[in-house]
Length: 497
Image 1: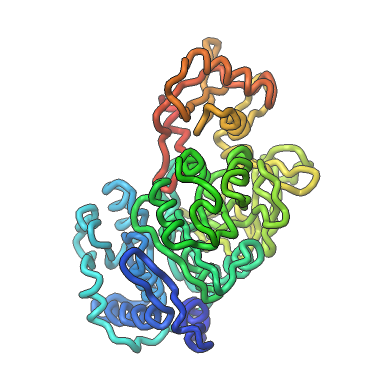
Image 2: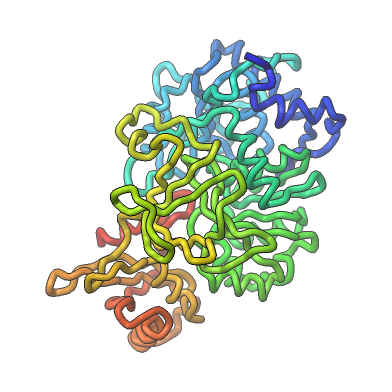
């Protein structure tokens, strides 16, 4: 095995060899880190792991905020041949403990202020003083030689429909996503400053704020706190990023904020991207009108590491996820595994080199999701005659109304297009005859309205926009919608109501 099979060599040490060591790699509210300093500190972290008796292939849980400490720990673990397991910092203590136990982590690295939420499990070291731990290592810890096919890190699925699953990714996949989506769609350049509101523990955020900027020697800024609209706009004004990555819910919140305007506060902003859930067309059009830039919406997954179907700067069609990213192939299949004609709904499957090795200790689910070179996404899509892919919903969320399939996302998109609606979620609900019909949960922009009148207005609005049989028979107004810690709406909780 060669040293350059380890992802650290290409993403980090290469920049020192090629004279980019003095460039800023990461900044948080307290300090900045150059590529040379990141290389030094990641070596110290690798050395400290050795001092702590943590070796190759052992898992290390990272319960860390988005600060410069995160890349030090992540790349330091890879340098040592260990396997970092980033964990969502917003999970419940019970779910966090489940992941630590399930991954059989030898150690947990935790940011200041999060230690109270860390489970104390016999045999698992808790590293809650990052600076003291770093001081145990030396600057010259070598890169452990690995294969590009060796497992590098794990990411846990969001658990929107069950217990989180450990998704195992290899060293080579990081470079694949950087050279496909990062370079050929996002078009990241060495002078870019990337700001991702999606956190680094998430597959989407990991690419945005770490591997994409590091692939070209660019810079990224970290927001440790929760990405509220106010906090995001403050970051945009202070750091003036050139590229911004968000999720549809956040874009909607930003558009509702009084501080929104051209560039969303950054006079250097040149590109905006979205993933996590499908972006309603109305949000894209309003963002373009108010901010002056399009949003490149796409779909990715933890299993594929990042976005594999996307709109592009010169090819945007709102209401769709775009077309396959260079290096990936997509197909829409029926329940028998046959390709469906354009315009018909089926499951989206993807072929690409960034697919995970599989789930940890979940053989049946691994075999169902990863079939040969193809990964089954669990998402229902339609491919139109022009080759654009249009999201319909999760496979288990599609509704059959009057014998016809109805996409909950299509109904949600129609609702959001009404000026009174901020967010919407649609689920199936049985009427008095036991027949399934759409039911909508709606968050309003202005609560000072006659809700009975508005409910009837929204029903007519949906009928006029997408068809008389698709309108929600019931509309329930809500203050919030249940979501995963990564911002995805948990429709199963709404169904349980």
